Structure formats: structure tokens, C-alpha cells
Image (tube, rainbow, N blue to C red; front, side, top):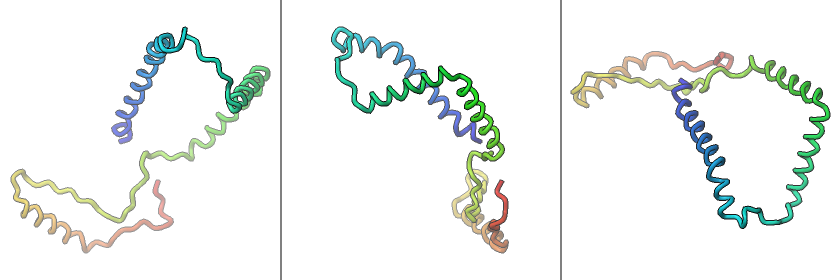
Length: 143
């Protein structure tokens, strides 16, 4: 069920990423050379937030390169935590719908008049009404 719902979305996502990659590698450099004066970015000072983010990024990269063991151990711990919570993750794409209603689909031969179809539907409804209404108990498992 999930495959039928998500396959077109996944294909569209992959196609858009591929198209974006092609544009980034071909069109963007050409427009850069054509539209910016002599292919250079205008000289401007960077905003303070960008300067701080770059400093934090430089510090993080320097820290990680100086201590590869810490990075590997941290990644290993994160991986083990992910493995530990794996059994507790949900297994279904959509949760169970306990709405307390029942949907009936009846098929009649082609050419059946609408009045006869309505009469048949009412007959089925009357036949099902005597059955007690089911509702999930608070302690019932929905897995």
C-alpha cells in the first residue's frame, strides 16, 4: 500500500533533484559569467551573523579534524542509539482508523435501475442494524 502511495512522489523527488543538479552544473555558472561584471562578486562586508556562523563552522571542522576518535565514537554511539530504538518504531504507514463506522460497497449488474440499487442498499443496511456496534476498548492493542 505504501509503495503505491509514495512511489510517484519519490520518483518526482528524484527527478527534481536530478534536474536541479543539471541546472546547478550548467546554467548557473553560465549566468554567473554573463550577468555579474567580469564574473566577480561585488565586494561587500558580510553580515555579523554570517561571520559568527563561519567562525563556528571553522572551529567545528578544526575540532573534528584534530580529534577523529571522538567523532568516530560519537557516530558509533548515535548509531547504537538508533539501533536500540528501532524495535519501538511504528510498522504501518497509516494508523488504524477506528471511527466506529462501516463502509459498504455493493456491486450490481450493469443496467440495474437506480431505484433497485437504493432498495438493495437499504435492505443490506436493515440486515446489518441488529448487530451490536463494535467499539475498541481502551486496553485493546492496535498493533
